[in-house]
Image (cartoon, rainbow, N blue to C red):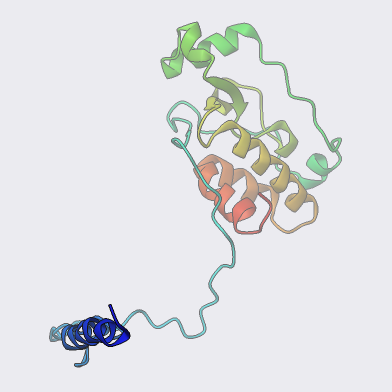
Length: 195
C-alpha cells in the first residue's frame, strides 16, 4: 500500500471517532442532574461550622466485640481513691483467680466445656490497678479473637496512666469500664492515638 492508501482509512477512522464522541473527555456537556427539593427537608449536609472533628484513623477490627453480660458482671471496686491506685506498682501483677471462682464465672456465662473456655481469658472488668475487686461480679470471660481481651488490657493501662496524671478521675475511669469498655477503648485509646 502506498502512503496515500494508508491515510484514507486513518482519516475515516478519525472521522468516526469524532462523530461518536470517543475522543471527548467523557463528561456530559449539559448541566448535572439535580435531585428535586422536598419542601421542609434540608437539602445540604449538616452545618459543621465550629465543630472540631476527631483526627484519627480507626484501626482494622476483625471479628466480633467481646462484652461482659451486665447482669453477671456489673463490676466491683475496692477503692475509689486515686492516691491509693497511683501508689500501686506500675505493673500490678495479674491477680490469682481461685479455680472454684473461675469455674463459677465460666458456668454463669454458659462456657462450661473446656474447648469453649480455650477461646476466652478471664479478665477483671475493673482491673486491680484501677481499684477493681477479685470477685465474681467483676470477672468476665473476654474473647481472645476479635476485639476483646487484648484491647481491654490496653485500655486498662491507658486509663491508669490518665488517672495518675489527673486527666480523668478514678470514678470516671471505673464507670467507663463498667458501662461500656469498648466505647471507653474508642475514646481513650483509639481517638487519642494510643493504639
